[in-house]
Every structure is written in structure tokens, then in C-alpha cells.
Image (tube, rainbow, N blue to C red; front, side):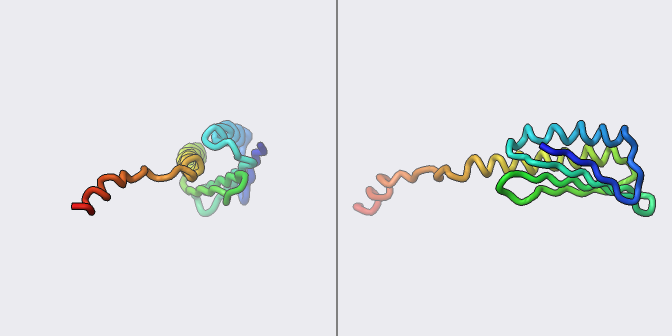
Length: 114
């Protein structure tokens, strides 16, 4: 799995990069098919904006965006959001082949014969 931290219009410190790398490296435990994670940080008029893209095998990328004054808090919020997205996708992926509960046809047939 490849993790990249990209900055636009702002110089990102090693401390922030290490923190982002540490937090997003935990995302593959929610979904095994994660191939790459991109953390994109931007600075515009006093606020930081952080966007995280998670690319997984055979699915569209998972994207989360937030903006605010604290990059550490933004990274925490985004990893929580992506964790929920990945968990939900995994549940849908695992349950897609299961048939709905079988209907008991004997009750229906007995009511028609009356």
C-alpha cells in the first residue's frame, strides 16, 4: 500500500506528515483491498483544508474533505469519516450475495384454500 502526503500552497512540517501517515496507515484494517492513500493539504485565507483519497481495488475512490484551523484535528475527523465509509462498503460488499429471508409459502397456500 502506498501512502503519499501532498501539500499545496503551504509548507507541511515533518511532524504533520508523520501524524498523517500514522493515522491513515490504520485505514486498511477496515477494508483489505486498499491500494493507495493520498493526503492532500492546502492553505487558503487562514484556513487549512485537508482531503484524503483512498483508492481500493475494483471500486471508486473514497474521498473525504474538511477545512479548519487545526490540521491535526482535520486529519482525525477525516480518518474517522473514511473509516465509516470503508466499513460500510465492506459490509455491503460482503452481504451482496445473500438472499433476503425466505418467505414461508405454506401460510400463503393455506389462506388461499380457505
